[in-house]
Image 1 (cartoon, rainbow, N blue to C red):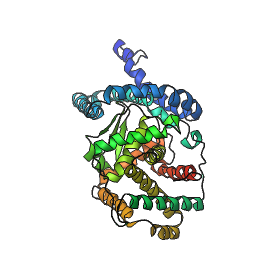
Image 2 (cartoon, rainbow, N blue to C red; image 1 turned 180 degrees about the vertical axis):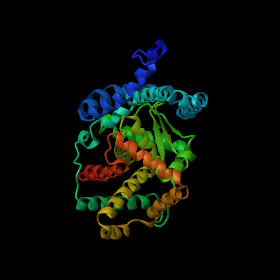
Image 3 (tube, rainbow, N blue to C red; image 1 turned 120 degrees about the vertical axis):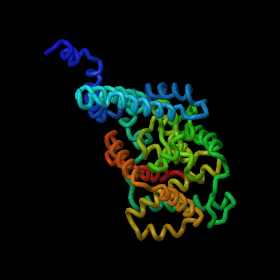
Image 4 (cartoon, rainbow, N blue to C red; image 1 turned 90 degrees about the vertical axis):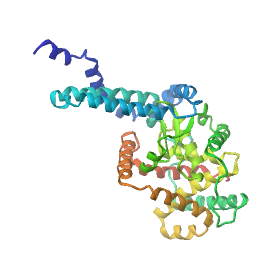
Length: 364
């Protein structure tokens, strides 16, 4: 064995060390998932709030998405590297894959340090001291209260029951208004404080739509990205959802619930309305899964104008449906399962449990 060969397989070789560290990171995270209180105390409520504010201060004031630029550069560099090195796949396949694994190891490490460890924190119902179980009767009672409040707000905003409400704000105005709900929510839950702001329209909105997503959080730039093609009633909720990711709530179901609280705590009645019909849709869908007869009955009590908003969203997503969306959702489902969400995309229904238990003893 010549010296060059031995040198490349030496543990002093940085690329080999990084490649070997990749599976070790995965094993470490599988161990860490059994210590959520440790993660909650020392990471999610410890160093993460400090780390997360740095990129928001650095990039939040910039009018366009730095994260989108970052991803474009990453894709360009990846294509360039593959073009220059593809021949190595046959000449030296081991080192071709060592280079790729070493790069993935660095990205994975940075991802977990700057945000990903939040997947392993305590469940939200534990930190908010809520039950996670509920009966169908409790669900129906909460849904009936949500319907009453949603119908009431619909009329108070000056619209006939059959008319679909359009929020009278620009997307930029809705970004600004989203902060108000968090400021008021902070008084009840200090851990949900949101500052500084860094939320932007995504330059990848058309691509996000074809993949079936309303927005995403870029952990590397700290920016919350919202799909600017989605319909207005959903826009403030998605904004608050992505902001919930920014403050360290990685699980989709928990970010949905925090977005509900942030919109309902907002002083603006239109933003409140968006939050109420968002939570209502989840509860109605859960009733349909549990008791289809109850679903058919309760749906008749919802203002037709609210149902028109739901129909508009369904038709919007249906108009962009494509085979790649199925692949994208499947990939995301597996990603969630790999990051401590055992039910994957189906874990979104946990949001209903949070809504039912939080509002059981609280007025709307």
